[in-house]
Amino acid sequence: MDLISAIKQDIWIPFMEAYRDYDEEKLKSIHTEDILRINIDNNQIRYGAPYLNEFAAFLPRMKQNGDKVGIAFVILTTAFNNTKEIAYQTGYYQFQMQSMEEEAISPRGYGYFHVGLRKEKDVWKIFLDSDKKADLNTAQFKGGNTVYELEN
View (cartoon, rainbow, N blue to C red):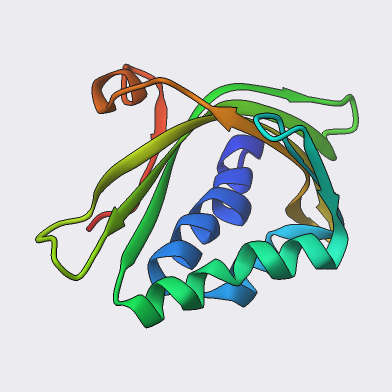
């Protein structure tokens, strides 16, 4: 399997599945224990288990409210170090939601992200996650780039 496909299988597909399935543990499992999270819009840095636990806790709340959530990704750039065990990707994400009153899940917002990835025991994990809001629409999001999304 090539490196890009391996990252897709280890990071992006489980990330989308975790949202779809409200799976807190799967969401946590794609991150390293020492994850560094930077929210640019809020000038905030978080890290480690406290961040992961808080981040993943939104999924059961959404399920309890009867809301469906989803996320899709566009990969813009990928770079690797010379040993091919650290990668850096940039791209966009699309957050999706459907409340109990709505008929279908729909986009609710977009962001621009940077992630640092590293192999741990032959599995890619996110060790750095940084993002900020992006002013996009669905056409711009899907605009000819590498789009990762789950089938509904």
